[in-house]
Image (cartoon, rainbow, N blue to C red; front, side):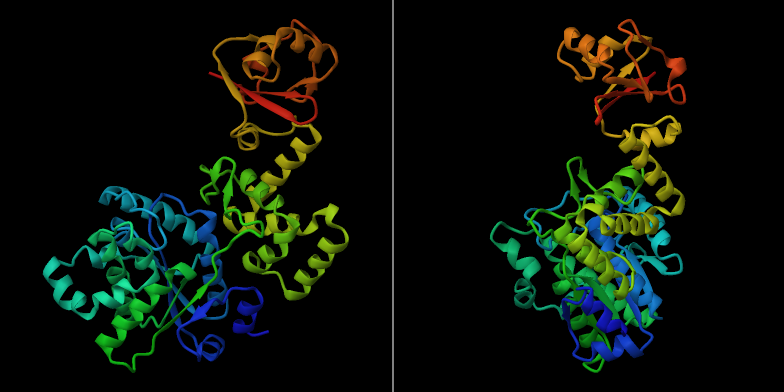
Length: 412
């Protein structure tokens, strides 16, 4: 299967600006670019697909340029946003760009990475209007879907000018790095075509540049992809732990898992077909979900963090948490009900503080019935004292009620 056929089979080809894209992707060694604005100091799972598409092209011999939008991020992309983004300061934009660069290097270690602040920041307003702005027709710009969707509610000139800046990114890379291709999600179609128009106006209609988009990922039940109960699924392990990241993919619905494997992993068609049969015939084994979670955690966080995520998962499932270290406890119990203490505390009082029980009477019953564990050991002593010296790393005491209800004492 060639590259173009593989992209189509995986559902990663949405729109293309050039009918000869199949031949160019399969035969040529193109320089292409993918951009991301540093609106936060981490990418989230919604960005991940784009970088994995870039990796597919790179593995086929194409050369990627990854653009961190330190300049365009100061303006904000209006594409399909209901309201204007909160503007970043230069310091915030550059700091965020630094964080994103580290993540991008982990996924695509040999890719060229540039920051468009380097060329946008040197542009004065007269040059912008005369040398770039003159090539843009306002009527044409207003007909772009990314702008049209905002006209009714109002759009500032700042956001309106965004597509000019991003179009200039493409022209700048074309002129300085021989970059012929831009890729992006389907919401970037208007920005990509604006860049192509600018290239053709500056470098003549014979300029060899084109673009393609891939579909935005959605769940089969219509809910937003990449969101959890606690919020956005980030690629930064300090925001979303490798355990949380692993759990997100483990919990993928049967109706979505094969599509996610096609889109997000590099497994062969033979292996994907085998997993599809597993989902149909033995869904209770959840083998496809385990493979998906392992592949993606390894790509984003590495082999060691994957091992930790699997270890924590197994420990929490079995209730045997004694072998976990303090970092694994922190990873596995992040976001759970917790209570900070600066001294020893009676177990009965801790159960109430953690809202594991409603009354001291209920707490006594749970303890007498062997339904409470401390750091993996059953406790039936009504006078049991939780002490800092017995905590994991002298930091965390794990309380388990029943089989599945966990909470955490944090020792100060």
